[in-house]
Amino acid sequence: MPPKEEKLPIDVVELDSSDDDGDAGVPVAGRTKPDMPHGGKSPVMENQNAVVPPDSSYKPLDSRSFWKAGNFEVGRIKSAAVHGELEHARVHPKFLHSNATSHKWAFGAIAELLDNAVDEISSGATFVKVDRISNPRDNSPALLFQDDGGGMDPERLRKCMSLGYSSKTSNSTIGQYGNGFKTSTMRLGADVIVFSRSSRSGRATQSVGLLSYTFLRRTGQDDVIVPMIDYDISDHWAEPIVYGSRDDWSANLKTIVEWSPFATKMDLLQQFDDIKSHGTRIVVYNLWLNDEGIYELNFDDDDEDIMLRDEANLTSKTNKKGRELQSHISYRLRYSLRAYTSILYLKKFTNFSIILRGKPVEQYNIVDDLKLTKVITYRPQLAGTSKEVLVETSLGFVKDTPSPVCGFNIYHKNRLIRPFWKVTADGSSKGNGVIGVLEANFIEPAHDKQDFERSSLFFKLESRLKQMVMDYWKGHCHLIGLKPLEPHLLNLQRASFVPPQVQVANDQTPPTDFQTVTGLAAHPRPHLNSAESGNIGRTNCNRASPAVQAMAGNATGSVKKDTQIASSSCMSIDQICEENIQLFRRCEAFIQRETELKRTIEELEKELEDTKKKSSELSSRLESQKKLKLLK
Image (cartoon, rainbow, N blue to C red; front, side):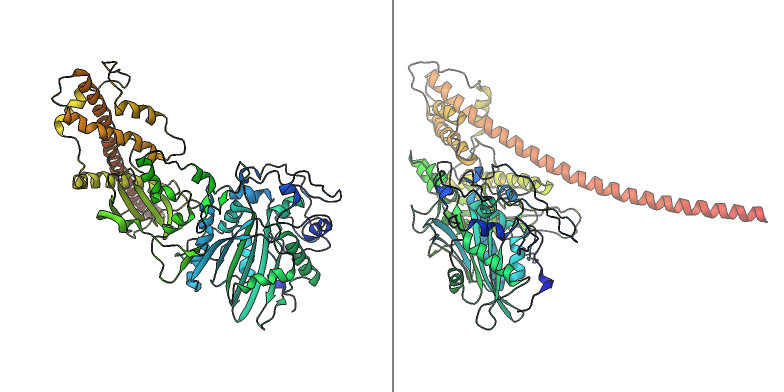
């Protein structure tokens, strides 16, 4: 097939090599092949005493732990100047690691790859498969992602492998930055190989691309080199697509075979058998380990799930309330991929499935399990546009109320960004058990899609959600057996408030629940989130409330004093929360007033400018008339 000079590789991704390339690209890998075991499992990755060939530019990875994999010295940059071409900036392999650190959470990286598959629904995709497979080189675990979408032709695959390029132009797609594939795959493992088959403009192609941090590090590269090969399969056989020379194409194939899990060209081509006529198959291998030297992803504890080992190890079952909390999806999504993916997308798919380890994920909308549901409409004020945006927020109590679970699931373009975001103050019992769900397309997510950019719209939304929770709580808490303290008890706590260090009058009196809880709340377990740590104090304060009523007539001064202290502390926190809500409302009113004043200022400035123009015109006219009179 004739060369196609119009599709030369992008600068960032050096696909082909030439005699002028020196140490860059494939020839380096070719030199190391006779003495170095194939990529996948190398003696250096598993055995630090391995013998390294003296004529190799090989450099071992410092660590298989992701957070330590970027700790290495950057060597001297080799000259990349080619006769007749301008010098250009290059991307050092270390950037692949530092770029991937935007994903603090491994499930966030997996979600990025699921988003790419979901975006392919418009191209006919009906499933995305996530599974554990074995690396044929060493039988180590590898992570597989496969969909039956439209696939990527050679040009789109090169954009996928490059930084900042995105082929997604629709406003409905989740991906938008052109960076998700690189950050997510490099966060999960050191290496990834992509197989894609596509049919566009009457031409059927299949392509293979290798992004290998191991290859780049071991061969001492100072630029990101991504070997790729393409085939034209329009005539039902695989005909190589050659852009430069046939030797260049063969050198790319040689590098892929040497550093990928597939040792021969035949093994590579067999990967397309599962793709059928179109789709993409991604294999992430050399998966990262945790600080204890164990794989970060746990495939062994549940054959139908992928677990986060470190998060799952934090799970403890000490008491009934702890077990109830840990069984809720708000807790399980931290370490169970099946739980996380079940709520990852707001709207249920009609003809698309996420198949996790051979079993479809059942989508779950938590709104379906809420009681006393209420829909509240929020109208954010967008600057610079006259278009009105309506955001519907569904609020309700969880079924097992009273419950410490609370917060908002905030989605953006159907994708979960912030799960169970607790907007109320820690330590307050108000809002317990209240869950909200909304889709906030008017604010922008952060690059890792696990949070939102801290814009003025975001802070206004946070303030509005706090107000929603408090208004809903006041209007509905009595319907589930909860109610604010009576006014006379509120006055009682104000009159009897004492500092927390006051001791119990009778030393023989056993410590109350409130005293025990005060110690726990001061030093919450570090792995608990705000909802859990706040719950410890709230639960026991609620226990103290009936004691105030039950012992109102008791003449024992010490018991009455203790119950008053417990009540006063709880109520003082609630008072602060109420004051905060009022302050947020006033702040929002001031912000609106400020916006109106700015608009008024802009209008007045415009009027002033117009007046100045008119004045200038009148002055010029007057001057002209004076000159005419003098001439006469």
